[in-house]
Image (cartoon, rainbow, N blue to C red; front, side, top):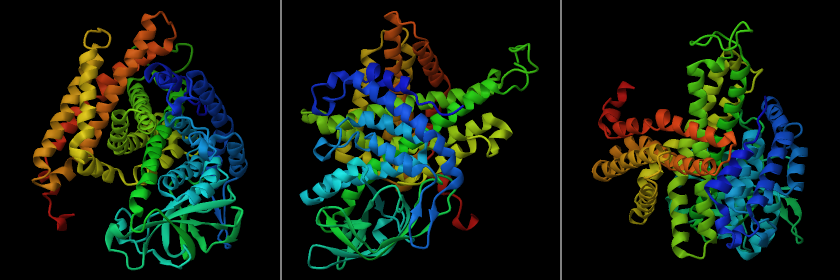
Length: 595
């Protein structure tokens, strides 16, 4: 069994849950009719299944290869697959037509990203990082920088990276040491070392555009003195083609637990030539444009690896014969029943399916609001879209990567001892998924960002708007007998989230450790509320199809999975509330020297 892209589920979400045809008059959706989107998703699924899936194990086993001339060779087949990827136009799917993109909405691009990441996470990171570089330059670059770099990044002809982390400066970017010296001709000389740079060097594209955080001589200390620079591997010549080799190079590759097919580099900038993006000392806001793109991308990775691990585990559970059903043989002509008959195996598979399908719906719903933030003529809709993207990005990144790893681990458990070997794909899903909880801001940092920044932003406008949207949905769907369990579950969990929010307001300011100790539980409680909302919307859409006479078992299966979510996943919200309300005291009570 190999990964099969869930095109049917995407079609259901886009067509029946999100109803993207409602937005057909907006420029961003002009080319995104439901039929066109279905064709795009089907073709993307085919490409991922036929081209990327076969290379996933190759990348894991072979890895990338560093040479003493500071170049890196990607695993066998990656270069040819990337050429096909570019030829088919996949990198440009969501890019602006002004810069050669196809202009499809982010909600479609996100679906394609999930499929490519599930098929081959290490490969998908190369174009994924380029999209983040594209977004940062588009947001803050000069007209000349946009004209030079964006078409090449959008097409995939060039790739991009972000160079943030240094040996002494991970999350705390205020202490970075990389320096930039102005040369008087509009360029700067960049010097410093960066670590953990994904796709920092490779052989897939003719040029690599590094976006580098550095401090200009004399700049203020801390994060207020950080600027952002474009530092290309090859300096563009007068025609915009790769010219002289810049003095930026890969010193080595990290030996990692997973994602072996992606080159994670130690990068040295030795008086490298760079160009300032935006204003001096205003680099961090621009880099956060790229990081927010990346954080949504990492949420997708968590979901994608969960989907791939679930599919592999479900296929194994249907084939592996072991023991007999507790209620009598289900396969009497064979010496044993398939392990799918055992309730605990079912529990792991249903946990996975309920979280994956709910998480996918919430991700696409959030991406749609991101599209509306950029594309709606209504200022109120724009504002709400921006608020929801800011509020839900740390929730999605933290929760879906936490659960993605847990689902991959359960997938290995379903495989039993065979899953712990390298003969089956279960171990790769566990190893690949683990990094997503760490990079682009650890999940603890995501939780602190949610509690410390996003809740209070603009006087709490985003969380109040989200709460009001849930209240309106609950009030408008209280009479449907089939939907009632979903509405009741949403109402209960929304109330628990509201209670948790009030607790934080009352206790977090008085003792910041209370907010810190509560943050991860709050993030998970927020995510469970979002998934409850997503499941209510999916149940409504599925029931409407059934009521209209559609006999496709897909819709009945969707309702069954949703009921499992209500019974077995959503009750975790009460536990999260109880834990966060215990405050910081039990967390901080043990003296430091006792550890």
